[in-house]
Structures are given as C-alpha cells and as structure tokens.
Image (cartoon, rainbow, N blue to C red; front, side):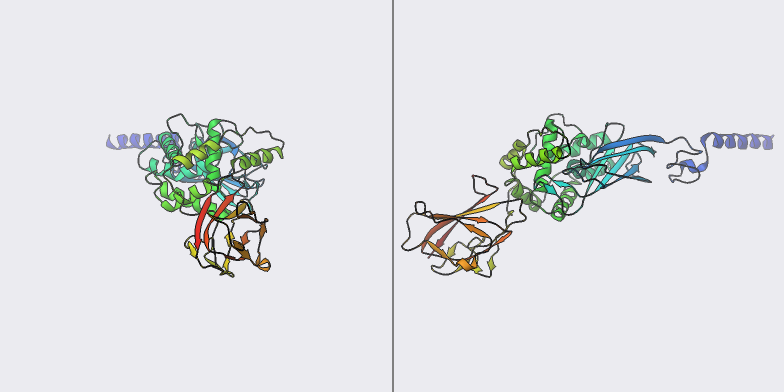
Length: 416
C-alpha cells in the first residue's frame, strides 16, 4: 500500500509538471524552446506588443538607433532587447511583434538631433532614455523629460513605490525644479512632443530649451547626467553648480528664435506645427526660481595678448593711458554679442578711449557717439580682442546678447 501511494504521488507530480510546462519556464532565463524569458515555445505564450513614437530633443535625425529592453514587474532587465531605427527626420520609430514577458520596457535613443536653440543639426550624437508601461500609453516618445525621470522612477520603485505613482512623483519633482506649477494634471512625459500644440507640450519645449541652452553636445550630455544623478535619491536639485548653469542660459535664450526654428524644421519636412506658448515658463523660472547664475554663457578671459582684459570679472580699477585687452569668447554663433562702452558723468579732454586698429580681432566697431560718449562693438567671431586705453574717469561696459534690449551684464570700472 505504501508503494502504491508513493507511485500515485509521483504520477500526480509528473502530470502537474506536464501541465505547467518544462522546468525552464520558471528559472528567469530565456532557454529551452522559449521565445522570451519564461514564455513562448513550450511555456505559456509571451505577450506581444507594438511600439511607436518619436525620439526628440529637437527631433532625432533619420537613421538614429532605438534600443528597446524588456523589464520584469520590478523593473529588472530580463535579457530581451530589440533594436529599431528612426525612420525619418521627425524622429519617428516603430517596432512590431515584440515578445515581452511584461508591459514594462526602457527605450534608449542614440543619434544626431536637430538643435532647436541654434536651429541646426547637432555636431555630435547624444543619448536619451525613457521608461514606460506599454499598457498605459498609446505611443512612447523619448525626450528630455523621460530621460530626466528614468533613474528617479527606478529608485522609487526599488524602494516600494508603485510604477504609476513613481512616474507621477518623478515628473512633478522635475517640474518643481524649473518652477513649473505642479498642482494641475500633467500627462505622462512620454506622451509629450515639441511638435504638439498642448499646454504641457509647451512645458517640454521650455525645459528642453533651458537644458540645451548654448551648450555643445558634450556639455549638454554632461549637464543631463549630473542632473539625473543629483535628483535620483531625493528628487531635489541640490547642486548649486547645476542650478547656476541652468539659470545662466535660461536668462539669455531667444524664445522667438526657438519658436521659429521649430516651425521651420517641421515645415522642411512638410509638417505644419503650432508651437504652444513656452516662453512664459522660461520667464517664470527666471523670475521665481531660487537658482542664481554665478556662471556666464560668455567667457571673459582675465588676460590675453593685449594684457589684462577690461571685461574680466575681477578687476574694476585700471590705469590711465595704459593698454588693456577687450576679450570675449562666445560658445558658438547661436548667441550674438554686442558691447556698448560709455563714459559716465562728464566728457573727455581728448578722446575717452583709444585703440590700436591693427590689434582689432573680430570686433565690428561703430563711430564714436559724441552725444552719449559711447561706442558700440559687435562680435563677428567666437573670440574677440583689441588693444585699448582710457582717459581717467568712470565707465560702464554693457553686454547685450541676442539683440535683447536689456543687457545681460553691466560692468562699471574706474580709470585713475
């Protein structure tokens, strides 16, 4: 009887194994006949998904790559990846028939992109990431907001927060960093697009433009990486350096130019876009953020071939009739620079200042205005300089960027 009972138990166990599939169906590895991790083949069928969307900073360029990685419900990678390509210059991508063991995936876009601040294709590639639940969104866009929130979402989920709550919290923390109102309902980051006309899409354009600023691709990538690391564990931007860099570029963005760049780019593809209002978000950030700009978009070297520079950020007292430099360095041609030097209080005995014509480097110089005792210098190259001296007195040097009527910097100095 004991042997008979044991045989029945063994038979029941074997039948149970046959109904649930091979033992490989529960080992967390894609092996045996499986087409996914623990699914497909002789195991329960995998879920099949299709993914489409746009990768955009500005939009990624045709031929850029998108990597799709399957996750389990704890957001761990399970070893399933799919590669696809962006199909046109709007950043559009599509992948069909993806066998995944859950609806959670990450997306990674690598490639060149259209720089909406400068209005031209990038000179180098960047990477943007996203994490999403495919059951909750009709399409998946990869953009700066999806990139900034990803590591924070993963951290929150690893510490017990549900995916949907983590997504909502991470996005609100990012918006708060840029002084965006978080009391209203905000769509998921992966549903936003710079080519759409919704109010939330305007927020995406504003934050994307601040992050891009007048930075090179490497500078942009470095800023994004540091931002992500800073927010990951507490959702707060703690770095004064990052905050300063964000504010410095926000203060000099030309929002009208950015709007037109976006319109023109999509028009070149035969697409008409209605760019939503976004400049107000940038101005609100400038006016209400606790961030302060201790750095500058324009560099003002201390010394150069013509001696100490009048425009440096440390000195304010100079010697009469001594030659000094007039040095600036722009990051690129996307930002224009105009300098106005003016004598304060009284006129001059001979000429308020004098310069060596042969020393002029990339300055277009106006005639001297005797009514205002001022002269205008416009930068025509990334690096400028000349050899210059002054009569005694008080002077101001006002820097105007991107044809703004308000100077971005005013330096007062005295010549003894």
